[in-house]
Amino acid sequence: MLPTLPATRNGITFTAAGDGMVHAKGTATDWATILVTQDLPAGEYTLEHTLVDGVGLFCELKSTDGRIDLFSQGTVKATLPAGDYRMLVSVSPGKTVDATITPILRKLN
Image (cartoon, rainbow, N blue to C red; front, side, top):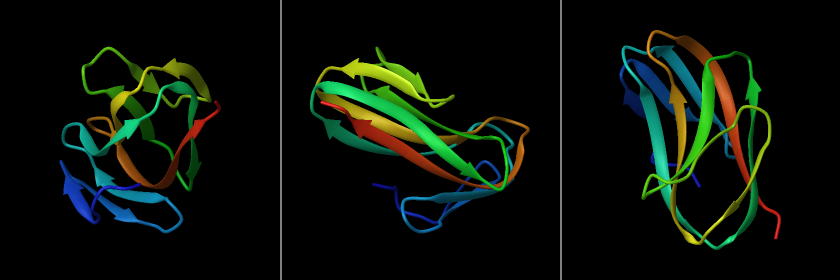
């Protein structure tokens, strides 16, 4: 599930690249983030991403209450309680990107 795209945030233009992929292009003047909120059932999950043609993009899963914050540096595995979570795709300030990312959240059980 992706947010409504295209969207421009702090110098970065995010566009849908098909099959759940997001393309980001530009130079971030501040944190450039797109997000979608989703209700997840309790369980064990992995968070990871694939990155095509570039660096500088990452995805993150945060609980809306701020207690859980997972980054997709490699594959991250966690047991999550049921609740609302935000899936973010971000570029940090000062980074120039022209890259495509696929955020992947898998429920294991």
